[in-house]
Length: 178
Image (cartoon, rainbow, N blue to C red; front, side):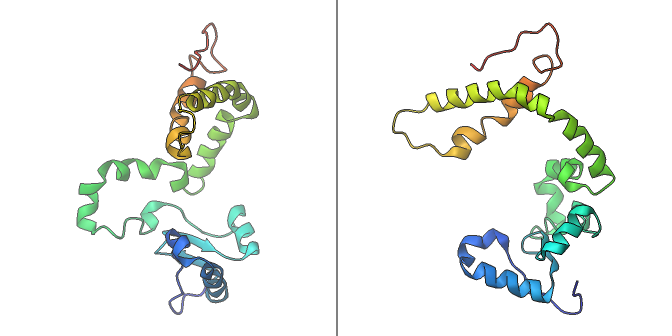
């Protein structure tokens, strides 16, 4: 990591505006600072394959903990608590906001909760719910996928897969999508 001078930053929220120059910008960053904390993006930009492998293996100290990064730096510090108090309360508890060993413990729990057996047991419900959502659309009506399908699924699937309806429940009849 080059810490002696300021690295060229790449704002990944502006990918569309960068267009073809995105690759050039990432190449410059790779040459100057291949493991770069991007204030503009609010994330680590790791631009070499070997470093990506090292990062995923835990060899690099790439913290995702929000208390260690300027996630809300665009909001004046005295205003943060006033504008996003709930987010500040719960963001540190999200799996993506934690480093090992907390992240590792949470991941082990999630791996069990989303095992192949559990996912396979939910598949018929998800297929039926997607079919229902599609059937509710008028013929030739344009469908915005995120609003029309993707936002409609997660909560219902989690509730359906949880007791008393989930795979570990006993004696309860599964609900069909409405």
